[in-house]
Image 1 (cartoon, rainbow over the protein chains, first blue to last red):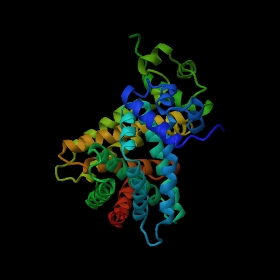
Image 2 (cartoon, rainbow over the protein chains, first blue to last red):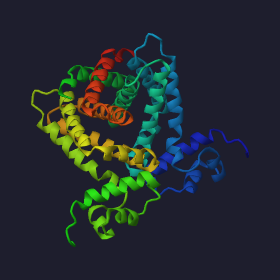
Image 3 (tube, helix red, strand yellow):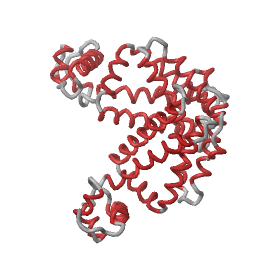
Image 4 (cartoon, one colour):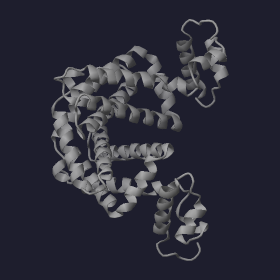
Length: 193
Length: 193
């Protein structure tokens, strides 16, 4: 496996995101990423399948984190409280990554193929949350609706967080979106359906 | 533009969907579709850009229908009631298409690229609904959250409708999902966020 490079993965990610922002994702070959990171292409491909994976490698970890949080929520927690705990865990992971989150989102927003990939990852997260809720005994359609609502809250709160330059932390933005969703839902719809 | 073919578009769509189900989407060339429909390839390409568009040409119309319903909702309607009216209009269009809806969904479910395309169309519908709500004076994040909730309800109710062989009509399934969403949201989440 070659010699150990201190924090090679993090250095590659940082270099890749900087270059994707500076020159555009499509215009950045792997060779440029490794040059900036001071590492070899062989090292790059030990960590990532391709240059797109630099942007999406974290999605799997995020999903695991969210699923674990749903499973760990108190048995007294309602379905919506359980997914709120999942988004709370996700918010912690996003806040920890700091500027990288904003850089990454800028790259994704500027490329249609990457935006599609992001939608697929969110659909996958929704499916995983619904599974985790079913694992807590939540029936259908409540499990799927709760999972989809969580994704809605995450999308809207995350967008506000990024667009606001991350000045307000993500957690209160998530809480606010859950509150707004409750108010909106209370002002019913079924009678019109 | 060549001679007029009675209901050419409908015949092409019917033939395409049958063949996509029987032989698989990827294994069906346009020539087979036109052969079954008893029409020429030239006629096909007057109606559709390619064989994928047969599956997604209706999405634009659906979006227009939904946006118009939001705009036409009474001024007293809450945001959630306005999107419920949109889904009600959508349900009418789906019910009208009958078996074609089930055939289409089977084709989409069996192909990853088509599933991705469907996610993109739903994201587009969500954006259009949020725009229509903003047009009614709904502020953020309520507009986006309402639109995303509507998509959640549509996805879950539509899936139940199809999986149940369309025995229960779509409208009560939509109403039920709005009800469940209200109950779920009422059992709060913000305090855990």
